[in-house]
Image 1 (cartoon, helix red, strand yellow):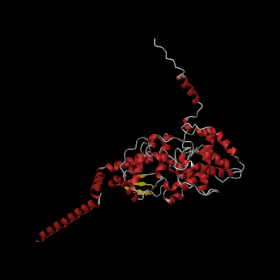
Image 2: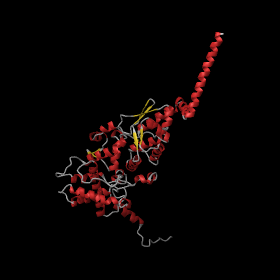
Image 3: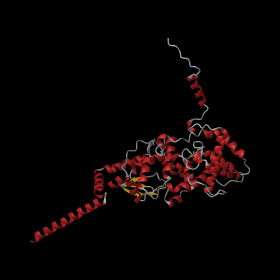
Image 4: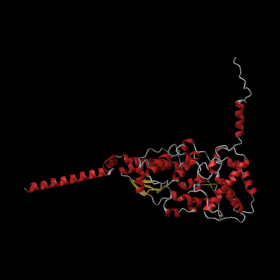
Length: 440
């Protein structure tokens, strides 16, 4: 009989597994997660798009030596925050954070190994920095006049650089009470900060932006849970700004997005492109009778960072609704080359603040790589099928070939025009000869 091997002092693996499972019963379910590390497959397409350039928020980038100079600035902001309400002490805020520490930790998908005091210190300084920064940007009673960096706006919406929204609300409500009330909620202040910082890139039409009020936002964009606004964090708030509630999937999609011809090929086939001046949401593309209407889109140096982080958050957090991912994947089909960008610019659909058309095409192609849709937007599936059906019809297919062959370059246009002129002159000469023959 074979001998039983001795463990040599090592713990029994099954007993260890049993103990680990029993301990996990004390941990909240992963459904509480809302702040994630960006998956490696998505990160590798542009690693710098997910790293803060100026200020760290939360534990994932805490202690980064590149961002050390902003830690002193955070203390200035914390002092300013504590001075606002003389009836509340430093210990009052610490007590709130200690009480909710486990709930805050449970929002992070990674295990946070920081000691309790260090963790609470980080949350307090980072949260108060965000609140004071919003008040500063909105011009609300702040003695702080300027900041040393302009990258803060982008840093605050990075998927990994977040604090749970509820703790920002709790500290805000605790401070602005007992005579120090500024007259509104933290969601309200966040809305107006985001409207000033990001809305022009989401809704380029100035007249439409005037109608994007807080009441409109509440009605058409802001999700609620038991009557309370449901916002996970600031990256989530950016996504909420982009996605209307009526654009969320109401039922599972019945198909997949098939490859769509790019914009220049659609144009060759006879599809007419028009800018949709009346649409508030960038996600609403409309097609009817050979006309594709697309809301105006602004592309700047910040566009890729914003879209990448919203898509990364969707990939990690949402199991059935990835509206921005769907939009980016459709955009990746329509815009593949600088020629596509140039044509859409001419139609007024794209506002190019980067400069080079090829750079815009490069961004749109990279954005959708390694992103996975779940229940793909049925409107987009229908749109892609109709566009492909239009282009695959024999008449429009040959029209596209004809246009590419004879109208793609100036010399071809000149050659074709010359051939037409020669044919016309030959026809006139033939007619003249026939007339002369009959006269004779």
